[in-house]
Length: 251
Image 1 (tube, rainbow, N blue to C red):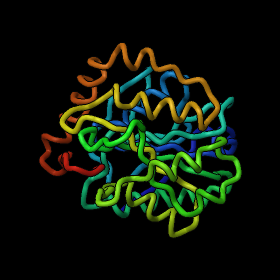
Image 2: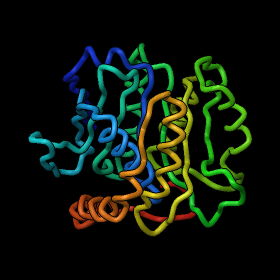
Image 3: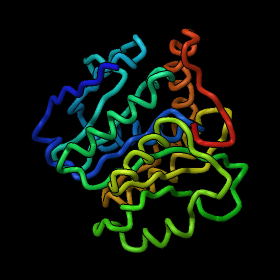
């Protein structure tokens, strides 16, 4: 599989210590979250990923081509945001996710990675709004927000639940390489995009990254966001080559 990252703003990328990614999964929580971060923080595209695993679709946004896999950043921020407008083809998702993980590991400035996903809201058994999946090395990272380690340990993904898809592959790969990373799984509806569920993930990133990320627009435009995501996913679903699944796990 071809996989190459074209860096457009090296000065911004080199300043990034954190990596954030959100995939199309249960409730579209990951994608909605990273989309909101990019829009609310007025981030700009700093790199693109060209891959033979990308579905053959592009669009136009803000007077420039929007490609399937993009990375955003901003000079005033010290983290980069990866946004997959479409999923890689299913038969290459493992290889794609591993190559992206290798790139994170090879970028010497990255110190930690956050991956956002969803967990079925009908499985909620506590007052917590998130469940977590940490790599072993997360506990060695000295710049975590105060009390976050304790919060993670108190709200680990319930035993018996499974994580699947690119998020699972990347967390597993980074864990094997002893890199600090954590999955933030917000409770969400299974059968539809859930912008309201993404509010919890955005709020936690606000705290972890020490930036102000407002969520009023996310709540206000929930229905509009749902329709936009459905419109974006329609072409790929029509190919019949890769369809989103909804199970009692993150996909």
